[in-house]
Image 1 (cartoon, rainbow, N blue to C red):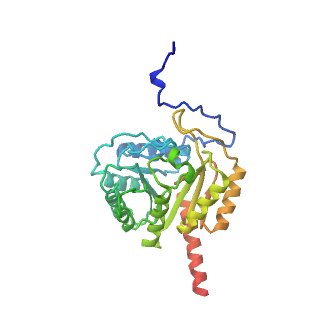
Image 2: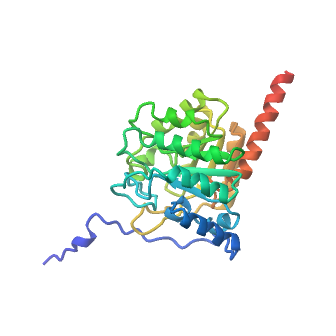
Image 3: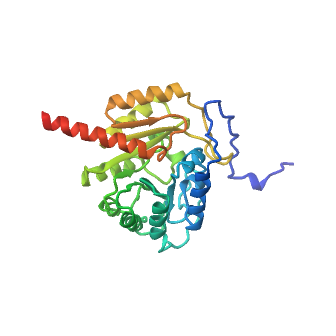
Length: 312
């Protein structure tokens, strides 16, 4: 007689590989960590730091840096790599844009990163809401650099133009992985749609820095990673982040391997040679990790390039 276990049907069990010695988060007991946590909790805000279980949360919050996640904590898509919960999202909070602005001011952020869950249930994917958050944040924080990390607004037409129209300093959209893995890793997304989004954002405003990121360790080949770099350069992306995929649980997409830090260094050198203004590449690199420092470097490089063109 065959004994079936209904609870295991359609529920993958992918054992998590033991982390190597170079995957170590910085631990601190800084007062700033708890100050950041209290401000976020007081304003009832979500952060990708918490919802996506970011390994850098202790370090970043101790520097009073956080990445705000707007439009709720529930995503309408089920990406194989992501730890954010999925399901039917709640209604938008009309006060959240002001809460983000207040928290940015209270934390005295010089550089704020604003991201979101996918909201495919909304007619514009939440683009208008992004614009409200940008505008409210800028009202109270005139000198703060605003970086947005957006979803792809797939099948939402020109909705993304609302976000670009808010003139964020950085427009970030992560490509995440190579095209051959999209159906398994990002089943609700399309590789070339993400490329087109980045390319279109740059066309609308070449003053905005564009940024994208990719994870390693999902089973991609090196030649595929290099092709992604070429595709992003063709889309005129300024800033590339390359980090290690860390499998959140046994139910998530299985980690294939931990990439050695030396390989990250090699890829950084290759990416720089291809023309990216800034490349951040290491096992713990994430989209908003050291975003403020990298933006300052990127801005100086752009200014130097402009001066060189004027001299020519």
